[in-house]
Image 1: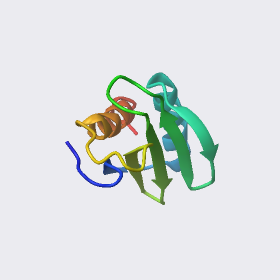
Image 2: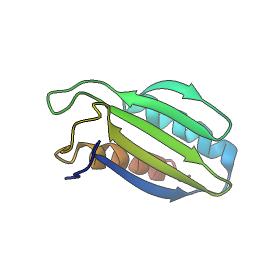
Image 3: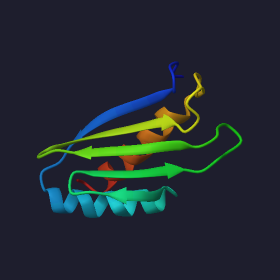
Image 4: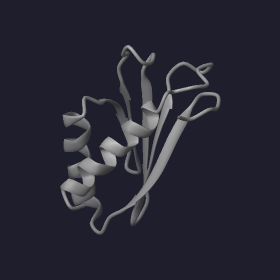
Length: 102
């Protein structure tokens, strides 16, 4: 359970091929129900919708040459407790990428 303003969780993943990583990332985000809001050459921004546990979460994935930083944070800027929702979001994305052997 994270505490902060807004509550958040992040993780870093490594990959060997940037093109394969982007392709796998698109598949994972779609399968996890993330709405992609914007894409750049080095980042993907999306969101999880409102649920019983939260007002939704913003997903930010910043992609470097061999690593990507995956961050989930609460959409509501004054939400300071996330009950583990952001951690679960990040873990679901990381596990999806690992399953695709990226």
